[in-house]
Length: 368
Image 1 (cartoon, rainbow, N blue to C red):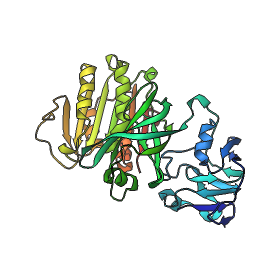
Image 2 (cartoon, rainbow, N blue to C red):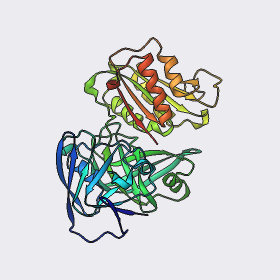
Image 3 (cartoon, one colour):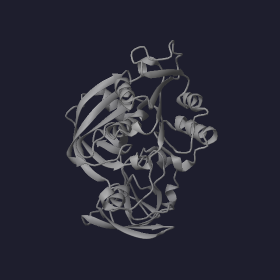
């Protein structure tokens, strides 16, 4: 379902016809910026493609980070049920940039500070075809998307995947890494009531065409920073961490740096990517440790019974990290976190209070 909004009043659902391209003006604390937008294009996408650092986190209507206020002009809302819309003062013109589709010239007020960035690094629209889907555990699936044109992305970034079968796009981190590739891989955990993941699990999806927008995200890995790594992930949050580990392994990064990975799942049988993680440990020759934290089960052995490179721990992933890292933190460290908000928040508290890491040394993605 879509809804239409005009500054100060509602419009009918059928947006009036207009030119193929409209002009968007964004008023911010750092100045006023203008960018072109296709008629019906999502404002956030158009602005990012123009090189503006518009605010976002999930880019799917969940977090509300891309809030703005429509001052003049007309938009339609793509996904009326997006969770963050319920938090807005829509009667005053509040919108989500990631859901607002312009149908006329618009002026939007955005409270965040923004600037121009390089067009070369800007995300793009792609089309793709799902292939090689397979179930990894009872509620985790992996699939790949063959892209129409190659994508360049950084380890740790994500993309938006959309299909006409499900309202609203979903954000998933790339599992793989290559300098430039026409194949990107994802892992998805099934959630109760999750429209997109239920679609993935209930139908034969191979061969399905999807829309892709990306790459997105700033929780990325740069080998030039020359820091040791702490990685903590819950469930499908391991996806972007796998991309970081792949990139680091390609560069032989652990020949001169240490890495600590903490991967949280409920039980031993819920673990996945364990063979790949074991291979990364082996390649690092003693400089990379991986701990699988079991939140709903007490392990019977110190190491995984089938993967002796992987340590086992009981409890939540932030507790496993706190126990293992006690007394071993140092300031030349970068931490990467990904998973459900409670997991990420708990890990942030550990890193800041116990590890004394500065917020600038912690990069994270929360999955709402």
